[in-house]
Image (cartoon, rainbow, N blue to C red; front, side, top):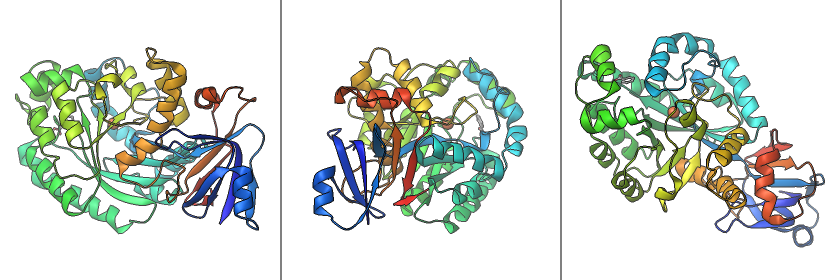
Length: 407
Ligand code: BEZ
Ligand code: FE2
């Protein structure tokens, strides 16, 4: 058991409580939290870690949606249009994935750790990222992904999926948690959807799916029209979408820990259904911008929680959550910068934990002791401005604690 104290403790709890000169008592879980003087009197004779002047201590950041296998992309893929991007992914994916060795992905994970990430939701298309995730101190919810809409391929694809999922299950630990990703409503055959979701329900695995990322996807799913029509005709010999959006959502009824990524073209009905399903929306604002998709209308979410994902380097120039948070703060320019910063820190911690079905993301009693500390460049005059200044000024963290251990 240890005490860590900081100039500021940002709890990211329900009330966005901030404690000036605060302290946290922890082992692998948070034991107590309060003002420094009070905590140090209450727990005499235990080790005290005192962070520097202008320090802030907060829950580790949770990147709820990332594709590590595409980490070798920087200048290869085409941005600016969803179809052009998708075609470029199909042309270059083998080349990109081949370069993303365990060593290469481990370097990216280390950089993510240094920039404040303590937990990721890793979408794995091939399981080539599994060893790097297992070796990293970062907690991983490892989403084995299923993809494939061609009827004559579904059996083979399901067998391959089950074998990858079984492999992930063999490495299950407190910091490596197997889960299931459905690629999207347009790319997954109803048989694969039904059978993978059956497994998810039986085995209580978290599930995540991309959903309505682009206008092209909307047109194809609703009307079997638009640029996806040519793509599907040429590529897969198909003229009709395999599922309508609402049919797709209705399949997810008994999933406990569920998230949908993007949802920028989701209708009000879709959002009502997402709410009813108890799902979280992974908001990936940089990815949406780079592919010239639209921006998630956060006001339309009402009470649906949203979390923050970088997506992969296939549609982002950074896997740093602080970079992503800054982008998100700038992109939603209709929101008050001070208030929205508080919302964003909660989205990147508490809501990420909800999306992934974890017991993290808040500095409150009994949550996992995953914490980051950072040093602000100067004194923060008004507590009200703290979250905004944390987002504006943090490039690298000062220290990270995962499961109570310094990493
Ligand atoms: C498919 O296998 O059906 C598919 C894969 C990638 C994009 C779209 C469809
Ligand atoms: Fe994605």
